[in-house]
Image 1: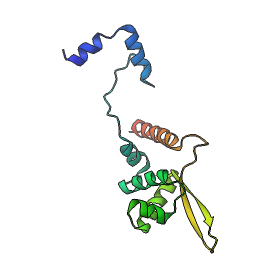
Image 2 (image 1 turned 90 degrees about the vertical axis):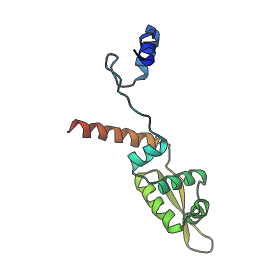
Image 3 (image 1 turned 90 degrees about the horizontal axis):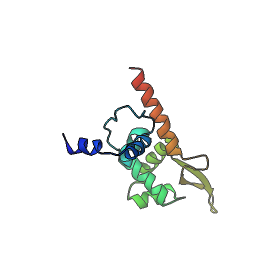
Image 4 (image 1 turned 30 degrees about the vertical axis):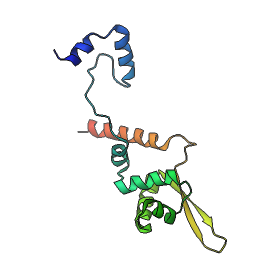
Length: 141
């Protein structure tokens, strides 16, 4: 018998209850499937289809709230056109928003922000929608 099996057998009734309660959505008598915990980057890649540069851009927007494309490009040491492509993808996912600021000398620039959390956590909502779609995909096969 492995040490893991022995330690599970030695759990007290209260220990089992705590473990069973922590397994959301799984009945107490169902076996627990072995699942690896994803990293933040894996979640962003899987749920939002973001690439490494998109993730770096998202992090820069979070650090430099209200930054322009040029400022983000300087921060990331990347060309402005590449940053702009990442910002477009991030806006399409709903993770980033922008607002237009008029310049005193004429013209305008866009400033970028992480998604507004007043209506809840947009990442958590997207992960919940992804989870539901993933379960539907499994059930349809």
